[in-house]
Length: 332
View 1 (tube, rainbow, N blue to C red):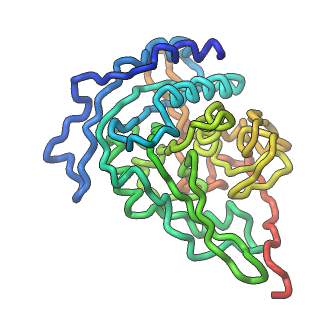
View 2 (view 1 turned 45 degrees about the vertical axis):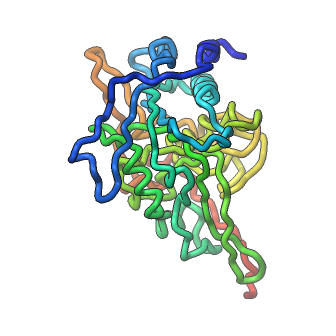
């Protein structure tokens, strides 16, 4: 176990502060959706976890929501595992000069209907050979399901900088549907049971309420090959705003290789420059990052100008204009 994980040893059993951090009032009813009453988890030593943060360094703010009433048979995510994976993520991002600031860890009773959700509506328009994945997503963004949107409204506490904050939300099942070619000119829907899902802006663009654009769901940290990298990988989707890609590997829904952080595999590299598909450079200008000035005020990076698609103007020339794959028979 690494030094940054030593503090995890104290997290065998967690307890909750009796002080309500977000008490429900009549104003907290959003339609028929009631906000969760969250309480801070006392046993997590936030001060110790953030002890190595440096003023002036690029920083991302992260909060953790851990339901207290998960089904008894669910064991794929524990609070210990979340905190260990968070510690590993701190290590993985350290060479980039970006630090992770843990705002809080909270527990509360979540409506059980939100434990299992379908993330987005089934796409109606598949990607063909005319536009690459990012161009297609800009033209036809993903759309949250009503249930997913209702869940986020219930779970996420609206704050002045909600659109700049990253929320790690533990659920039991989050399903992600997408379209792929089956044969010839025929397409089929494939649904993935995710271990983590980042809801990145390159996919949803401006179709998601900005209050919830920082949500990342965690549903499986049990496998040894998952829990070290999962949070760091999902953060990469959010703050680099790229899909599963690495150097000469163009993005896709599922790309397995041991290259960089953004592929499914053991890699943790955040490459830079044109050959690295500008991953490091895109990270450093993410709207989810800020620096503290001498007075302690947060100086945020500039926000997206066009909803956060991959080619959003904030990235300038830090983009890759790659050809679309010819995924169907050209003689269809």
